[in-house]
Length: 226
Image (cartoon, rainbow, N blue to C red; front, side, top):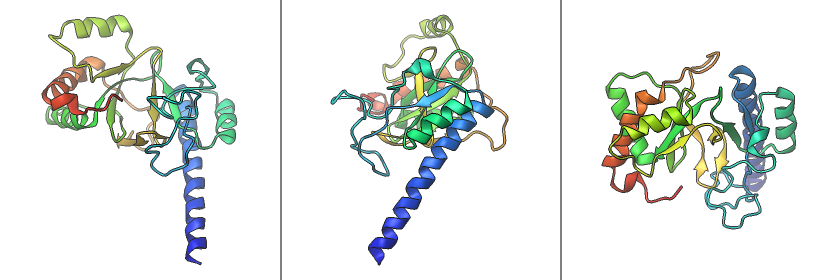
């Protein structure tokens, strides 16, 4: 009996998780006008995703489940019918945001450095938008920027840690409540409930704190490559 009850609980959990991904994708695309698409996803079905293999053909995929694959990134859309069609057929697929253009960009860094940067930004009283977290990396969403603007900003720095990543035009980012090879994707700072479209800070406003946090954290905050 306990085994049967446990199986039913797991089934309810999976159904709820699948519905949550579809609901989230529709909210991002339709309410916030963020172009999304399903990510590659994982072969193994686990709650955390840890150690699971990517569904893409690469057996040595370094970002299992956490990247676009069939469809490719250019398929990202805000069309609700397309989104429902995708997730009806692949309910376990992670939600991938195509960054740049009119959509949010992001700056990501290792989780330890991310926590330090967030504390520093909070200490200045700076207003922040959504922050996405995985067990290994945190990503601060920022207003759209182009490569020229980013290049000028980084050129002015004495050095920029290699552990920082910039998700701009032509890039992508996994959004909650996805699951990837590194584990569950969640909101460290969730968008305000009921907001028409989340407010985003300019990249200039946050990059100093992110560079400082990554520089002052041994190993950039993590030995993980991804």
